[in-house]
Image 1 (cartoon, rainbow, N blue to C red):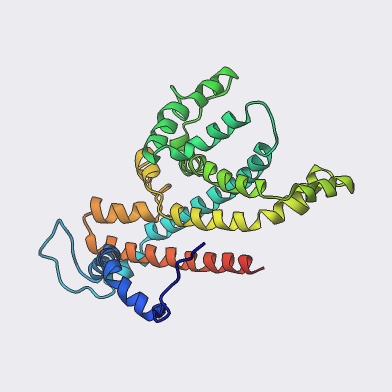
Image 2 (image 1 turned 180 degrees about the vertical axis):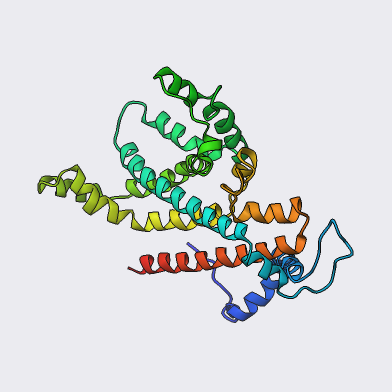
Length: 304
């Protein structure tokens, strides 16, 4: 039997980490450069226009505005109304999706006939485009004459409700929550399935009922998953736009105008690019502050 061996004089040495990074830099540079340009250029232009007098209807008004756009923004009642609507929308959707998502995750973890089909149907709304979802709810579900909810109300002798006229913000919250509930369910169901069933069996043998098992075993186990759901949903819910644009266009009045729709209205409906850019900078700061605290909260949970 013979073996192939390395030459005694040959030396095999690994390249130092610094050399490996330098050799990989030319390959990474194009993609990194495109990514930086993709982020920095729009941000820089938004920041630049926020300090400029730039109105598309009156090109003669131009020049450096300083903090005038920001001063006008924070003294505008519509800004505070939109900020309040944004917080209400985000908070309400988080409560609905996390609450019902947790309950549905526990329910779908139990074996029952048609479990696979039920899971697919429960998760499918997340893959519907926001515009399509808003149109379906506006015309098929919540329409006071032709909608399903109106027909059910008339069937029991009640007066149909014009949701987008009487309860516009609640209607938008329902639509957005319907879209994001499957996402919370998917994350939380995965976390529930990773729970050690021996713990639940031991608790059951010690006399713990279903409610006690849920409160003292399941909920603590879902803590990290709930934190992830809250972080991801919050970042995306701060930019809800399509549902409002399709259903209410920010109305009646400013009842459903959130920060994203206010920026759109300033820049593309009122043609005030400077004011819209100032709102965009405020929205960026708000999103980054929220993301900073959420990431720190999740990091502390992961360290436990």
